[in-house]
Length: 162
Image (cartoon, rainbow, N blue to C red; front, top):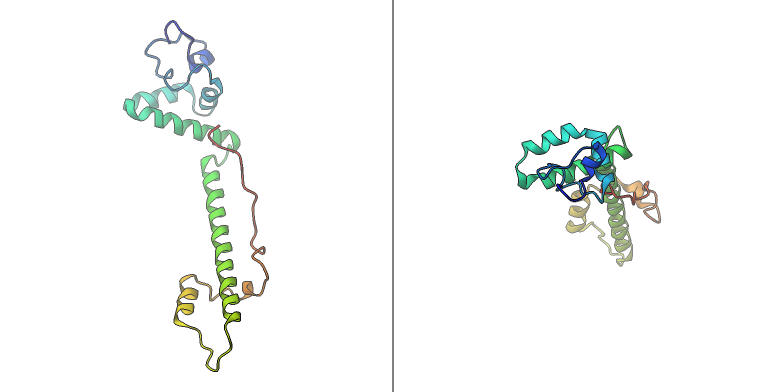
């Protein structure tokens, strides 16, 4: 910016960084990798046009989104962010299934621990629990000693923000 060190975009594009450089506030010279990814995925011209069309107060959020998407595209060129979202949705589904299995196992244990009575009918609360959690169609899962029969994917510990 002016007399000081040029921003990361101007350094990469080998041009003079002016005081009104649209990239300077968002791509400082000490983080050149950030702009390099965005430039590689979207192109400097396209990013410049996008930022110029936005109000000043929304530009930082737009750059943050562009960096996130560029990082995701570098990791997964086909699916990008959609791949990460899909992975997380699948993980939520698996965890919901594990929770349902655990709740079913708890209910079975509670029912086994009740003293036997002459009219052993299911309590209305138990029926609503089974119907609410759609567990009537899952008797085969109740036969297992643990909930380890649900497939598990390892957690991705990588951050898409870096």
